[in-house]
Structures are given as C-alpha cells and as structure tokens.
Amino acid sequence: MGHIQLMTAALANQIAAGEVVVRPASCVKELIENSLDAGARAIQVHLREGGIAEIVVIDDGQGMDEQDAALAFRRHATSKVYEPRDLVRIRTLGFRGEALASIAAVARVRLTTRAVGAETAVRVAVDGGEMGPLEKVGAPVGTRIEVRDLFYNTPARLKYLRTVQTEQARSVEVVQQAALSRADVAFSCQTEHHVLFQTPGNGDVRAVLAALYGVGEAKQMLDVHAASNDYRVYGVIGRPTQARSSRGYAHLFVNGRPIRHPGIHQAVVQGYQNRLMVGKHPMYALYIEMDPSLVDVNVHPHKAEVRFSEEPDVTRLVSQAVATALDGTLLAATPVRARQPHVTSVQPLALDWRGARDAQAAPARPSQTPVQSDKAVREGLTEVYRPNESAPKSGLPGEARDQVVDPLAHEEPFAAVTSPHETIRDERPTEWSLRPIGQALGMYILADDGESLYIIDQHAAHERVLYEDFSQKLRDRGVFAMPLLAPLELTLPPVVFERAMEVQQELANMGLTYEPFGAQQVVVRAVPDIWQGLDVQRLAVEVFDDLKALRGDSVIEQMRQSVATRACKAAIKANWTLSQPEMEALCRSLVKCQDPFHCPHGRPIFVRMTNGELERAFRRIV
Ligand code: ADP
Ligand code: MG
Image (cartoon, rainbow, N blue to C red; front, side):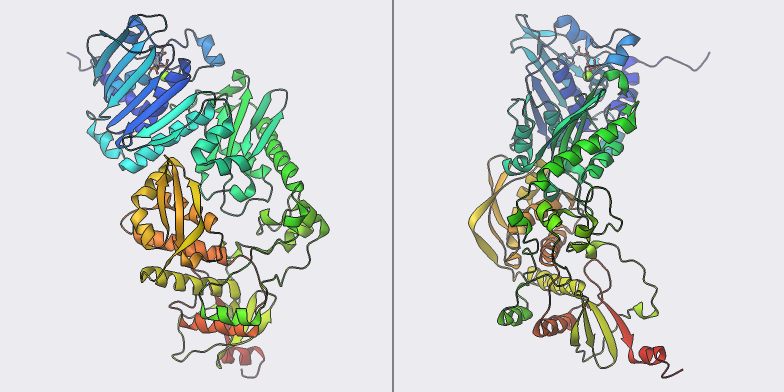
C-alpha cells in the first residue's frame, strides 16, 4: 500500500493561504479588491485589534446570487477569467480565484450578499474551510464579509503576526492605497475606537489626500501629467519642502493597481533633480496607465509588483513628468521670498550665550555664502537643493548650487580624514577653558586651551550644546509648555494619529500639548519652550512622524530624543558669523558638555593639534 494520498481541499487551501494571506492587511487588500471588482461605489472597512480579531468589509457592489455565494469560497472559483487569453488583458484586480478560499481556510468567515435584482440576501458561514448552510436573510444590495479570528487554526502563523498596532498600521495603509487608487469610490476606515478617515468618492485625488494627510498638505501638492504613445502618467506630487523622512507617503498605481516599484520610485526621485534633501523621500500619488499587454501583473502572489515590457520608456516619462511639474512651479516662485533665503537662520535658544548675541545685536546672516546669483534668486531654488551633491546634475545652475547654505552637511556620515591630527582623544583637561581666536572659513572656530590648537566645527559644537541643553531640560521636566497664540491644527495619517493618542500624556510632559479634534486631527495648544523661535509646525509634524518608529521599552527616551534632536536640527540651519562674545559663549558651553567631542550624530566636533605636534610639524623638535 502506498503512502500518497490526495490532500483534502481544506488542507490544500490552508497551505495555499500562506501565499495569499500572510497578515490582516493581505486579507483587507483581497477583500477590497473584490469589492472594487464588483463595481462598488462605497466601501467600508472595520478593523478590530488591527484586523487580527476581526475585519469587516462592506460594499454596495453587484453582490452575488445564491449559486455564486456557494462557489465563491472554492479554490480557483472566479468570475473574472475564463480562458488563458483573458490573462493578458486583465482589467480586474482579482483573477486568481483563490483569495476567498484562502481566507476562509484560516479564519471564521461570514458572507452576506445580495445581488442586484435579487429579493433577498444570502448568508453563509465558512469556518476553517468548512462551509455551513446557505440562509436567506434581509440585507441591502452588495456584499458584507466578516473575517474573524484570523489564523486561529494555524498557530504558527498567528505567532508570526506583529503587535496590534503594527498590523493595524499595515491594514490601514492598504485601505489608504485603495482609496488613492480609486478616488471615485468613497472609502471609510474605522477601528473599534474611531473613524480613521473617510474619502468623498468624488474622483478628486486631492480630496483623498486631504482626507489622509490634511487639507494643507494636499493643497500644496503639484499636478503632474505626461503622455507618450504607450503610456500616460498623471497624479500629484509634493513640493520638495513636503518631503518626508519615510517612504510611506509615496503611492504608485499602475492601471489602477497599487504597486511597489523601486525603479519607478527612483525615476520620481530623479525628477526632483537635486531638490530633495538627503534622507528625504518625496510625497506623491502617481498613476501610470498603459495597455495591459505591456505590463505583467502576475509576477507576485499579492499582485504588489509588476514588470514592464519597456521599463526605460516608463521611467523616462515619469522623471520628465515630475521634473516638468516642479520646474513650472519653482521657476514661478516669487522673488520676494527667494531674495531672503537665509532668514530662517539660527535662533540660539536659552543658552547663556544668547544674551551676548542679543547685546551685540548681530543679525544672523550668512557669512560663507556670497551674494545669490540673480538667476538663483529668480528661480527661487535655494530652499530645495541637495547640498551634498558634488557634481552638478542636469537642470540646475551649478553656481547657485554652490552658494546654498547646507542644512544637512552635518548629517552626512563623517568622511574618514587622513590627517594625523584628526585623532580625538576623549580626554579633557580638568580645568578646561577654550579661548576662541577667531572664525575661519565661516564655519570653524579657531581656539586654544594653552596646550593645543583647536579647529572647532561650529555647527557640530552648537548642535552638541543645544542637544545636551534640551535633553537635560527634558529629562528634568524643566521644559515648559509654551502656549501657542494660534493653536495648530494638524491632520495626521491614521497610524500616526493613533500613536499620538497613546502617548498624549508623555508628550504633554515634554511640553507638547494637544488634543484630538475630529477623526484624525489634533489641535496643538502648546509646544516645548525649547522650540521657541523655530518652525513649530514643522517640528510638531516631525515629532509626530517620528512616533511611527518608536520601538521597544525606551519609548519615552526615544520621544525625548526626537523632541530634542528635531529642535537642534531646526536651530542649526544656516551659517552665521559669530561675534567674539558668541564664540566665547559657545566655547564655554562646549567645555561643559558631557561629550564635547562628538555631535549628537557621532561625528567629531573638533580637530586638535597639540603643541608637540605643531613643534614637530615646524621641525622645532625632531
Ligand atoms: P478572484 O477575485 O480572484 O476572482 P476571489 O476568491 O477573491 O477570487 O473571489 C471569488 C469570486 O467571488 C469572485 O470572482 C467574485 O465573483 C466573487 N466575489 C468575491 N467578493 C465579492 C464581492 N465583494 N462582491 C461580489 N462578488 C464577489
Ligand atoms: Mg479577489
């Protein structure tokens, strides 16, 4: 007797479910796709415990009759492809006919559906792949699918799930993508606690973006369109100033399908030329349309990737479309704004050397940067360079690039320096006092402590001093909430909003006071006083954004760091000429730092040459 037996359908489905259903978000995706394929105009998604406990998707699509409802959970049951030829002209989102079978194999599912024209709805429950009897019930036209206890019968997969928070974030992201993919369909997404967002379904992509990220962000974005013989590209992109530190704000759709495609993303980035700051990712919702035969959607079980037959053509068109949109707007920037590119400069905060600065009434002004070229001024390009790019790339005038204040130079990894004097020994004299001699090259303070000559990177030093000051204040609860005259209304992405609600008290302890306002908005009433004089709106957005990355036990410390480092970065924007008292104050503060040797990002603050080294260099001793 042989050992081989055919699997039961239930077992086969459970195994296959591993490919299609890896987490609640993949279920949400499949269910929404089915609703869209059914012609729904409105789709509601409810998530309980991030979708792990329950996912409910309700649509007003064409529904299923009794016969279809009975077949829908069978593997390879589909109404969307009938013959191989259909595969090359797929216009529906689903076509594999395995989503419902797979989901039903690993969860408790209940389907209630009423076909257009049918008198009643039918309801059927499928539990771990076992289908119960069909019942007739009353329900509106459309389909409601409830998926409970995902992976209850596959403990290994259940274990693989992340926290409720993470799973919810991923599920919500799927709904967001779907809402963006079909601006003509009204989506609503809610948890057991609140409605996260609702889109109007009026066909306007900006209206969707407004629902997701706030009206302010959506308004600023720029329209994109371009077409070639084979492809059409359209959508909206964020201005360089709207770029984010995560890629989660980049949305790409090919023939209506949300996809990931590093090549196209890169093409978008290229379209920004050098206008994105290092480490920032553009915000966009871009749509590419083409004949379905030019793209293969069947390369990935979740249909999340595609392959283009003529990829270079597509990427070229995308880059051009993005560049054109940006050029059009940024060239039109008003000279008034452009002429003052450096007014965002440093506002030293509550440091003891602020007094010195004020007394001198030395205006913050660029020292190293010569006068802006007329061209750069006219083009208003100054705020958008990527300063660390050494070789000028196409499109931007090289001379303008060189003049731009570099807000991020200090975030770049420190290049290894070969100078023998580079070594910084982490030791300091007991009675250490640094006497500044002067400023060199607009960025360095020369100083001596009686034993050595120091070349101090003024930005790095400033950042260190501010960082220690801020962190100390935050740790000691010495930070005061600085009430805002006009409260800030911010619309947060759903995931961020949820997180912000969870840590409301902790951030309030650091001076950032806000409360929920509507489903996804917060009103910020006060900010940490260490943000005084800075762009508090930007800082608040960044700190909220950072919440997404909170991990592990030290979340309070991570938030503290976020509040402090974001402020440091904002404060260290531009170069400025230091007066003698300012240099003295900075040196005084620096020597008191816990770590006067490294900036908060770990790069050295100064180069030191000891007297001995100098004597050797000048051959005074051998
Ligand atoms: P596929 O979408 O690949 O065809 P699924 O397993 O996702 O496979 O769905 C099987 C079939 O069930 C679909 O082809 C469709 O006919 C039907 N169906 C699923 N969801 C819905 C829905 N929300 N409204 C109407 N019909 C649906
Ligand atoms: Mg499907």
